[in-house]
Amino acid sequence: MDEKEAIVAEAAGEIQITEEEYRYFTVPYIMAQGVVGAQLQNSAITLNEIANRERGCSIVSKIIGRHGPKKYSSAIGKLQKKGRPCTLEGASTLNDIAGLRVIVAYEDDIQTVVDEILDLYPDAEVKNFLPEGKKLSGYRGIHVIVMAKIVVDNEILYIPVEIQVMTPLMSDWSLRQHDDYKGLTADKEIGAFFRKLSKHYVEIEKIRMALREYGVFLVNKNDEDFHVYYSD
Image: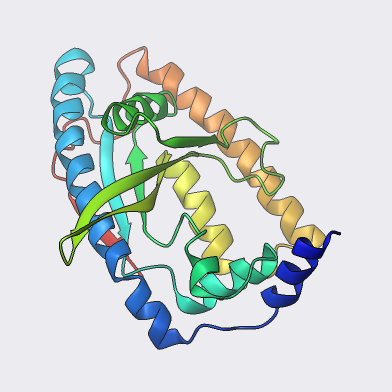
């Protein structure tokens, strides 16, 4: 470990940002999430109109946004886990303070939405967690990190917003793993359960797409009544 790494590692354990400072710092992130959410909503309407004409089934069923920015405690925990300083500068390195989740009907719809996002943000960073084993936990989906342009006090800012694109099954898996067993997945039995569940979901995804080819849609065929939801 060199001198710079040692300084960062030492600073990482010390919380040098208050919750109030963090709350003020994240205001632009809330604005950026709103901008990106509106763009995604408009794109989804167009995608669904085309998909309903061509295959009789929508692509995007739901867009979910954070209810406020990433929680202070979560941000601090992530900085400490990554060995980054718990400062405003350190917080600015996090890409998921603002976030949206796009739920699509089928697994092969994910890339369609990702391509649409890349049309809006050509320089976006893409993280593909779809291949089995990519995430040891069993988590699957594609993350796209875009830099949203906003104006604050006549100053142009570019704020990162993480967009997660996944199917209902992938979202269900992640919510169960996060909400029901948060902090417990280090347990070997619980970790093994979620990896096994993920494998089962992979097979179900394949069956759903195969049935679709025969005109059997395991979704609401005319689901155009969607909007941006906000999760806690």
